[in-house]
Image (cartoon, rainbow, N blue to C red):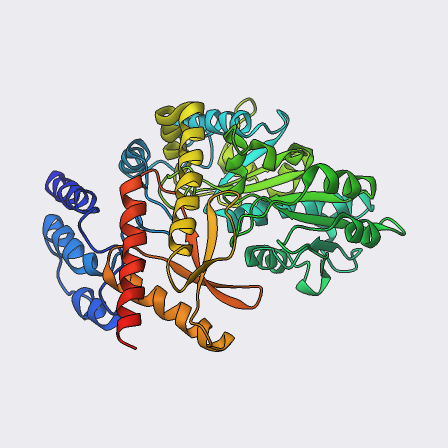
Length: 466
């Protein structure tokens, strides 16, 4: 066992130490990875240290260096040093963190961490919380509480009677939503046919007049889903205006704050979230802007009774606690790792000021990237970033929209192939664009300069080859 742990540490250190010089994007094809890692199931075992060596060698070429400072795709970052080390401890301790009786220390750590996060985000003190696998399951958790509450108000017990014959629940949202909300609605049996889009402005923000119109008429079970930073340009809905309109109509308000909720932690960007505390539930990711390892989402619910009623399970053999918080009362998983512990470590490492500094630095770097790339010949910034998300499109004079769509995708592909930086593409307002997402604590001014230079070099090569 010690030899295999030592080998794992050796490979982990080598990976992290090489982030500045290694290609940012993975290089191996699927077939190459299958050849390196696959084959027939072994008939006999191997030495654990040899297993780790082979694993690291075979997987390395197929890994993106998203832990580095020049990876700007899909709102992905690496882990803070304390969070990574704490995650190793979580695996070594191997506690089933579903109940206090089973894992006293890790469940109390979760309790402490949840309270710290509510304080950090400025959410109501009475909120309950859950640590989930990611924002997808955070949405499911929060919307399960919402489903229970809005049907309970309508006189329907969904726990006892299910959805057969229940009053239909209307889900109001916008075309700017993330598709994890659609998936959550499906998982919970409420049906995508009951999702209705509210009109948005040019930047994707929900329009109050249209929301008010859709909420006029008889009161019915309704859930409104709002955005705290959409995934393309970071647009925030006007919470201070929209939430009171929804509450007056008896609707439950849920906020998708996958990364945008963290704007609330930074003085320079807090105003974007004004009124967000008026909502009923919130979902976010720790493995995005808090830079903890993957497998970490968070759900917060104002109505703790509805949250517990929707989620809690029990059995005589489980020894539920009477005076300590059991995570299984708030989370769909009974058997689960202590995923709050890396968050605890990150918050201890950064403190309130450090979280704010991380958020503000990323936003500054995003503006510099979008502005710098957008100023290149053949490039055009599609927005001035309000947070940490931006879009750039690449165009050739006289080319059609479809040709410039293809040109944009080609620039992204060629830039990623340089190994100097990694971006992803998206479609926004009907046109292809390079998406610039900055959430890593490692990103520096030098990383920004190298990334702009990589795109400039690609554009120059493509221009000279014409």
